[in-house]
Length: 306
Image (cartoon, rainbow, N blue to C red; front, side):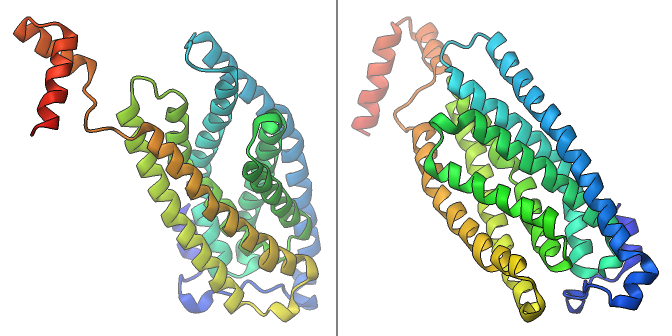
């Protein structure tokens, strides 16, 4: 995939913004309208297929978690964990394709990046269906911020599929790539639902996921601003401007606010200095012949007076 990209165009900063809509003669020569119409038909088929498959996957994951008979996990947590599993898998599978697609649509002409555009639109259809399924399943116990985030994302993904201009597709590819690279974060959130007895591993996984999420949000904002600077906004449609200047900035604000939620989650599973593992207590009990409670009390006393 990467070698085929390198053969099509050179990756230079000056190439950003060359994905201009072809003029009338070029459009007629390459069948531009037919290409766009064909992409829309494919994406419509993906919508129908995803609407049937994704809820079944969620139900399968939920059934699997129920069979595990983990008493400390509520039915609500199983539902959320099922969505996190799908988002994790979708991110892991979609990331390499979307990274290449992002390079294509940003540094190649639109006619040279049709396959990349096709991959991006298919991922947009899958994520839009996934967000709608998750929102429908969790609406009664979702945070208002989660509802706003999902509604904004679904609206933006729908506009990408409806508009299909090079400008909005370039921005949309940045958006979808950002959604795919959230996979480490969803791994941490998945472990958080099953954190009992593995708080330390959960904390470190969440730290890694949130750090990755923060770095990719900075990159996303940078690329958003870069595209706005390089493209001529006066030539864009009203829908594209609403997408680029309104909804995308609103999404940045929502994602920034989610760090407050993730900070609260981290504090719930943060390892404490006074905590001692059960295995450590058992080892010390075996060696000293003391009861577990006395070992624990002695360790706490030592820490307080050290």
